Image 1: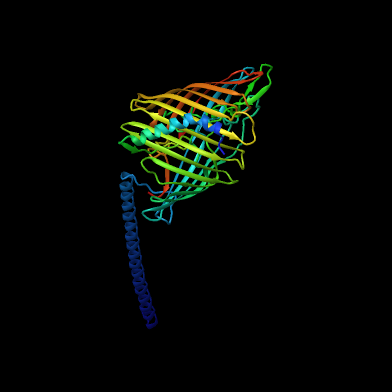
Image 2: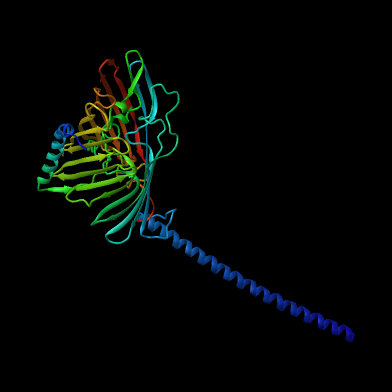
Length: 406
Length: 60
């Protein structure tokens, strides 16, 4: 072997040794990387197992992750609502019809309630509640060709309040006036289909005269004079004292009202009552006095009454007035929920015209299914209108359906 | 203003309501009671929301 060849051999050997060392170093590096990756994956797996354990513990404790979150831990937001649909049969003499309706006794709606606590005494809250009544029982007409609207959400409550346990509560916005609901206290358990506002069942149906001509609608001949309804207002509620509470509101347009309420339990006998005065002369042209009381005895029998009188500005003759009475009974037929039955009677005079006498009587039943938040109901009601010189046929109505709270 | 005629007409139901309220206050064992007005969504369970009857979107 020559010197040149020997040098070439040594160089080649050195290169091979160098390459071998390099490969060995790279392999060691790769193993180290793999080890680190395995450690990372192990940590990730541990975290996932910890999270799964925590979720199971939360689920067992009734705490679930919320899909909506807030940066303010002193605030609570609730969503609730109901669907109330039924079938209504109406016969006004010349015509009978079947309608697929939204029950205006307690309309289909959704509600958002927000609450926040400022300190031990003061809290604030908001309420947004809108209803969506397709073919409302209060809006249908006997001769309509298509469902009654409006085919959209309509306002019920868009308001906020500040509440002090010691000073009371102030409401601002669209919501209940102080007198709203004061003709409608009811402990019978049947209000989903029958209460003092009987025009909610078929109020848009008109009486037919003997010749077939249509006269006043039920909701024109009848009212329970239930205060000033919901409106844009400022309202103040006193704190409750021994079950009593006072309220007053100033309504957009210059109307105002005041009311007193009571709700108490006497050795198992429940009593609720309300009394109100409303002055709507500047806007609606009347002032009125109204009230109601409902008593539920321990064995399930209830008695409910309401009355009111309206003074119409500039109208001669008798003031319109109304009476309502209901006898109810609540009992348990099954473990699924309470059964409530009842009969009622109402009379309104001089509303659509001086001398009018409107009378109605009904019978109804409601079955609750508590586990699914559902009530099934059935009501039968007859409406009569006596008017001097005109002979109106009676209006007979049957409403059946379900209210499902979701 | 409320007319005298109307005052006479509402005297009956007004007196009845007043009597019930006075009877209530006269009773020694008054327990104030929560009452949800009938035009409100009533308390109780819901089909989807369960026993609370409302979805709590956030908060306790």
